[in-house]
Image (tube, rainbow, N blue to C red; front, side, top):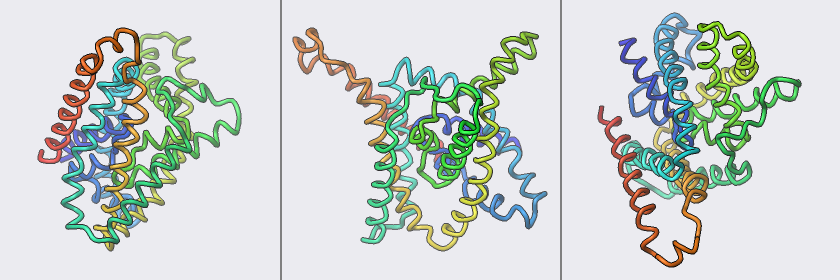
Length: 304
């Protein structure tokens, strides 16, 4: 069981890195979401059992994040049209799962979905889009830097516990996505430098890795608070929770298209103007293929 939970944790870790994809949705799909909330919310009642359940998932998620951070960031920069289309497919694939949890719609659920989706879109528009290579804080130099990353951890990780909410998008809203994931990627580099005895490079990498300390502190505080809240809501209002999730997920699809696909759409040139619609067949086919592939991937994980 610990090994299986570690593998599931690794899948959640990979999902955490993908902009717009919710790690909590993957936690639900692999059957860990509600047990995770219960373990965190009721930690004081039986901390030994909670630790025994949480540690393999945490290690697996950490490994998933470390192994995928560099690859995901590179894909988003080098092949944004294909990468973000695939991410959209992953989010689309979660819709059947969410629909099953809704058990039908009524006007209250529709209203909740609209409000939650609108809030998500508003937050994104306020925050704008941050490039994955845009590192806002390179190292801790002031108390303000510490406070900024403390809040980023609290804000992104706590909201990420709500199914459908992407921690990556939340980091983009507070303009710390590039900062945090660069720091995570440097953690792996730091290990390599230390093992190979390259102390100068290790020192430079450590300056970036140190940014994770206030982020983790904020994340832990936010996780405890929101886990208790979500544990209560799921116990009493599960259908309405997933109505809100539906709105957030639909908004996430729009956000991924707006921030990832649209900027990567082929620019109008003399060649594309002469070819007309024919010039767009390739990009359109790529988008459709990647969305289908991403959708199939999420549905597969749902059934696994």
